[in-house]
Amino acid sequence: MDNGTHNSRCETAQQHVCRCTGCGGSQHGVQGWLDHVGRDHTARQRKREDLEGKLAWTDDHPPRLKPTVHNQKATIDLARVDIADWLAARPTPARLNRDEPYPSPAEQVTALAEEMGRRAWHEIAADLHRATPDTTTVKRELTNHGWCDLFIGLVQTIETTRSAFDSIPGTVKRMIRLSAWQADRPHVTEAVIDLIVDKAWHAFQTAAFTGVPLLDILSSDEALRALRVLAVFICPAPAQHPAVRQHALKPLGDDATKILNDQTEAKLTELFADWQADDGDRQPIE
Image: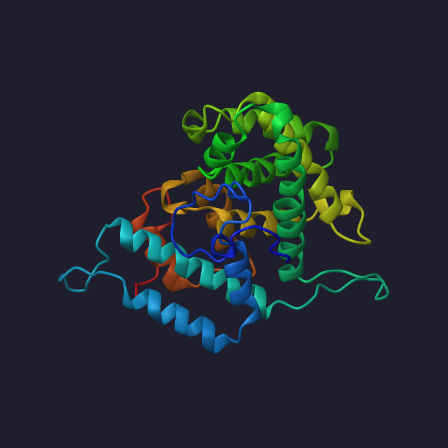
């Protein structure tokens, strides 16, 4: 992924905050987590051990995680390591016609990040002055969960509409306008939202995926999974964004292919009240 003039530290950011007006949050943290996918298992294991070593526990017997923001952030990052592990291990899906190219799950996420994050943002940034006189403020406000709101909106809309292509952008626009975070983005007006969603939807159609009809993509679980992974990777603070946990991280945890491990899910269950699990399904925290 070409860095262009964007600050690469934003793309590999590990902090749970984004203020980058260079990309408006459209590339926050994504490349850093995709880089973990490309590393060997030992490197990801070191990352996991580093995060686990930072967790704070009570003196209870057995000990419990302290209900702190620090623990929430570290546990979210453990879930991201789980996702990177899963992406690294997944082969390219089998196709009936072996001559048809088809991307692996990691390639799917990378393609969406490239088209919807980098390339769409370049087009948005070029046209943003047509939608607002204060482009710098809009870019800053978009770092306040603007892009994860977009991806979650797409996930929820595709999940319910599937083949109704024409209705998807309008529904996503309404969802962003109704987001709880929109009150903190007063300069992200309807015109700005229209521009972003239209460019991102076009980018999604471009990315989904070479040689594969869009209807097939929207009718499968793979596009939803890739969008959910991207939402979790790009969100500056999933611990403060319930929609990302509910509509992206939790479904990844429920995925039949076992994306999150039992220990991570147990930690998420303990730290987040909205992470529902039956008592009989809960695993001891290690």
